[in-house]
Image (cartoon, rainbow, N blue to C red; front, side, top):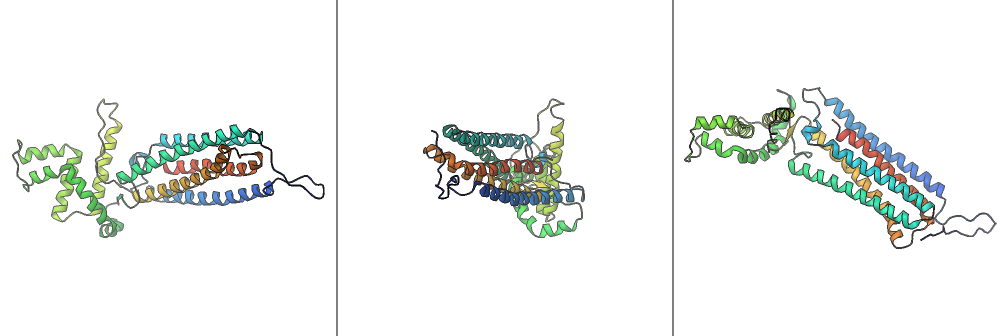
Length: 333
């Protein structure tokens, strides 16, 4: 359905003005608003980059890699492609409305909203997966260099919470074997303690459980020490898996315990802040474009909404470009 812009009569014979005010003023307001948004994202991205560069290699720990944080760059690239597809659809919707083709503009807006919904679905799945595996701010064990002063403060504070979460995982991994080997539990087993210990030593997960549970029982365990041991054990698995395909053997799964990484909570904070802020902006863009989309479905979309759609489209394009910065900081590494 084709709709023409509503106009008001001018008493002095000047050309009629579109209803809704001066489109140029609205455009200028949108550019000023986007300027503040650029400053916001640039400041946060720069802060994360400065933090990353400041810790990388400074204490022997470095910044967590994409493999260590289980961030798949291909998922980030795919999500970026979805956003750029949505931007293209929004630009086409603006062109269709300018030509008076409100039906096609509506369909393209709905397609762009569907693309954004797909993006948020993938991002939501990633957030849920990271939360369930403990790769979330405050849930990651901190790995410090040997003898670092920060390690003692960690052991006396937040490290205790992480160590309490670690113990049930270790019990599930090798608690029974540990109790049998140490004689704390009696059972009819075909192998003696020495043979059982040898079998445990060959299994990375059970060996980790045996060592840390022993330290806990002796009262020698510290959160920082346990975190370093967890990190080293999983790093050994990751290094081994890099040659698994070439050596024609199966890849070993990571040891299923709460994760421990150097600067892991710093990384997780950067990821949650940047990805969360971007997601909120994308939802705001969806609301902005949802208004003309609903108007089109109700048959009320006309060329008098063109200035609004152009401004909403500008915001959408900004959110798309902002994802490039988020991707480089969060996924690349």
